[in-house]
Image (cartoon, rainbow, N blue to C red):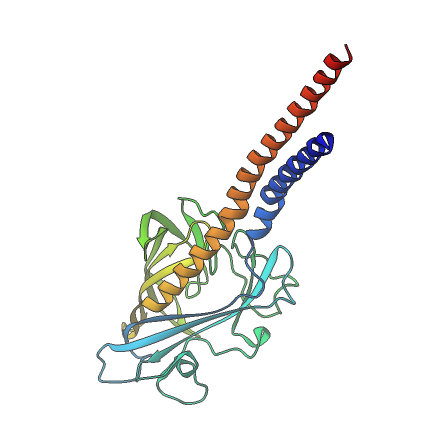
Length: 310
């Protein structure tokens, strides 16, 4: 019975060591991938004025913006994820919820930056990114023909984000700009990395076939473990060539959106920490201890048998 117990101890120790290695070398990398069932609706609120916001007397109006992002699992792969996305802005006139903010048709409360999709292929914006790094991939066979090729980060930072600058896509410019790391900051009690970029009076199309100048100051608060954006603000201006204000908008994630993002990040961070740190650490320590104890008992038992024989 003693011998059976020793071998059982060695077996348990080996199992724990293998489990620790599998969790760290396979489980942790596998967990650091954007889920293929991503389906998110992000709400922003603030105010806007200009020719685009055709409500009121030219003064700033309260607005709500909706960003919708939907993954296409069929087009995605183990390493690449394909998204369909749209954004719309509504002049806030006691609308009831996100579905009302993006009503089709001629509702004058709605300022459509890009129309709501009917499935991913019907979306006005479709792109593919690396599931680990968040960087845009070549459209190739992943993205249906006719969609703009993006570069840099698009809708999230990489897992295990670093304290450095990243190239991030700007839809109005149609190119990537440098988002600079500017420090850490607590958001709803959760530590985030803060990044920002600024565009000043860039000459570009401010809408379809409408040249003008574009300025933007955008700030992101990012969960470093998952790369998810916890909070975002933007201060944006679009002027026509004649200097008329097409859009002057200041918006940011709503308090509810920020809280939901942080709650999700805390849960995901715990899962990553469990798989990447605690299971390998505890499993490794217990495995080594069990094997050492088993070996000592095995060696000690053999020594006692020889002494008895002598």
